[in-house]
Length: 543
Image (cartoon, rainbow, N blue to C red; front, top):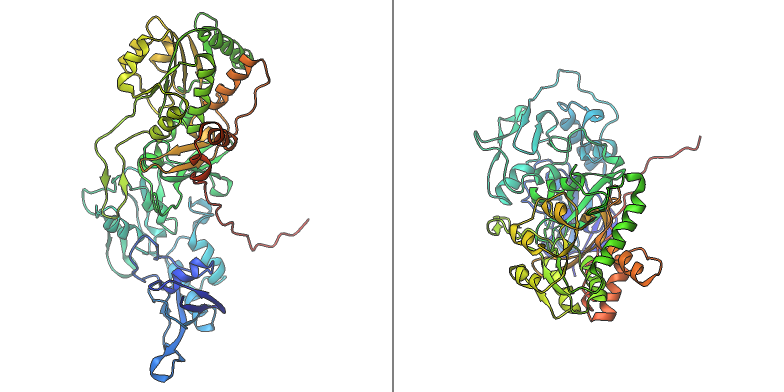
């Protein structure tokens, strides 16, 4: 394997990689703005320039210096190269580039949403000057509304053109362009063509400064207060990897999590902005039993006990049919299934309705938006088939329900999902509904148990390509909701007269593998890769 030396460190690289790519692969920082691994390389920001020495085959491969600084983002790595980004010449260039970029920048970091995750801030501190030498008046640029989700603060733009290349190369929609010349250049939209493609929010992520901002997140939270949990797309069958960013029990935004085998660097706007149902004012928050007075939040424990007793009493000795939602995790499906089989060993299972919207759409850059709008239909079916021989698609739900005396129905959809066939199933039957939002089923059910959304629990989803991926809990369940798996454990413990255990997704997967032959949940499940933590170089002084 060929080797290269960067800033005194010798390392291997793959043929065809650029110097910057090699450095990033080995955790060597070379400052860069215009380079993004998912886009073409224009080498227009110029801050990554370095001094390079390389073997000259005409002189017995003796190292010879290239007479000018070269862009590491665009220069291909070759065997025996020596690269330095810390020489006086390279450092002078870094300082000059930062000075040019900040000449017309408003330096409004205290009010900028990008503060705390801005390359301009970071590189100004690491590579820039401590004071500005520019005394003239700055050129003022306008603020622009680019589309449904995107705002442009042109003053802050450094013309890296990442956003322009994204709309040309990834989405192929070409809404963005560079308008004007020199210091008056601006990013703009073509007349009458706002940035409203299905992947539009990604231009906000790839902007290295505070120029492109998210209308939804604008002035909502300082990023250094946010915590994040590794999660999976909860709305479609794609299995896209995401970060759920939250603070004090509230979600503030969803960001893509890089996975080159699933979603690369991108997510859809549907996933990015589709989490609002988690904090919907119509969330079910307390259990209720038909015919009994509803208890207030101060009596939440009594409400759960009364509901659990009503469920076990209403289901006891009856023939049960269950609708298990494809919005639930594999662990939810497993524990709910084992609980119902402990009551009725011949219980019939139906996989809940799987919503579809249009057809799959693949963009020129290779990203596919899935028409199937459920994250785990395959995982739920896989688990239920391991538990029972009586598993049916939702098309057969009405027929299956005719032989049942009691129903357990789970939802967890992000919007109203109740159809007339589902309501007809409940006629004359004791019905337990486990759901997250108020709907017609919750009004008719004998017992309603408030479930938890995907963000309030951990578990596993199986995507359209049968890839099993785990996700972490981001926030605690809202108010007095409980995860479906926890509800199943509580009900099982109540029937057995023992103390309920706390649900643990990893332990549940081990049970699935050991007791029911689902070895893939131990051997093939993909867990989130730990992200590299950046240590601050700020000195802390004890007072």
